[in-house]
Image (tube, rainbow, N blue to C red; front, side, top):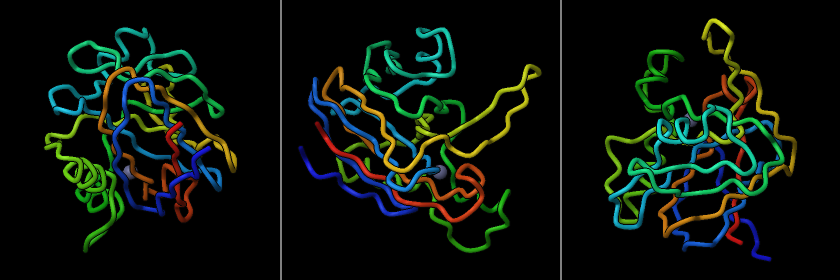
Length: 194
Ligand SMILES: [Zn+2]
């Protein structure tokens, strides 16, 4: 089995998947969420949370569910899910978010920039960035629609596996937002292609 590739805390990574390959997303230390984006390798199709909610009929996705493109083609299927709670509602954290909600004054690492950089390194122009699949991010939706964060349910070593349903460019980010990751310092993630 391939050795997992580490994504250091607050950083991103990009890779290509051929149709039929699988990617395992791993939380080495537990309690850490990340962002995943997928584009077709020509950049013509991108991950769509709206299509995915429509065709699955729900906003919480897990084993057996398909992540769809904006042109209604299957991009990724969740084949293993040891965590069982992910978010697909929230936009990736950005420098503007850290300035508005965290009081950041200088630069702050953020998933938006990590994902854009990873995609550009793979030859994809990503902006405007679609909503990422926020794996392991634990968002609770109250009956009145109010949204709250809880710490990710992932324990050390937990993972999920997604199968590529077409040739894809994938971008990943180990989210540096403390509020989504239990309130303390954020940790690394890892991945391996199976
Ligand atoms: Zn983030």
